[in-house]
Length: 281
Ligand code: ZN
Image (cartoon, rainbow, N blue to C red; front, side):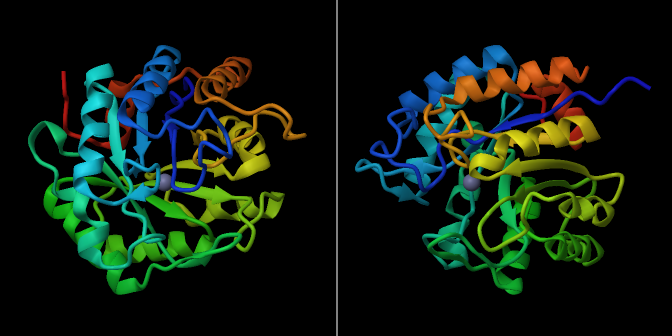
């Protein structure tokens, strides 16, 4: 059987990196569009978006997300747009879900849904079960597919529970994030995750910081998929001497995929794998 085409999910911005941390992080719509255009040439299927306000601070406002969605679709209407519903900045469901209400040409096809609470290096990410259920329910009503995010194997188990409860439609797409200080490290035993994920789901690995490269290599070798980008890692090299750019990170994934004989998925191939019904062409 030929290898499954590799779905590359690009997370170009995130909430944390500032221009002071790295001049390469794209924060406004024009900068995001420029990075997405460069990465699209190399083959990216999903773009995971975080908005910033006019001062470069993270924003959950639909008014700030809308120009990003429009800019990505201007680059290529086939790209799968995923918006964040992170609770790291705001806690109410209505605030977190604002971008889900974007309509028409601005409606996102996917949105992030973290399956539990955890700590990051200096702040918590709080996701109570009722909030996760409410966000899942709103995504389902809007026909938006969750990008499930799991920092621990138990979070995957919670995702399976949501399937049983009718709040998630299979096949699910789950991103396993490894290497965060305070949750699952990137160690061989971390691959115990795999046993928790039903075979019919699509899974990806996202390594945080210096673990990004190893997580990508593992995922490509094991038949999974990857999420990369400056959201999760701002350095290109292990010694943290070379600032990464989104395009350089994507280019390296292509080199790895080629070495490991994995073709890279087009957005249309990714849609078919993920069971997304929208064909935007
Ligand atoms: Zn994110």
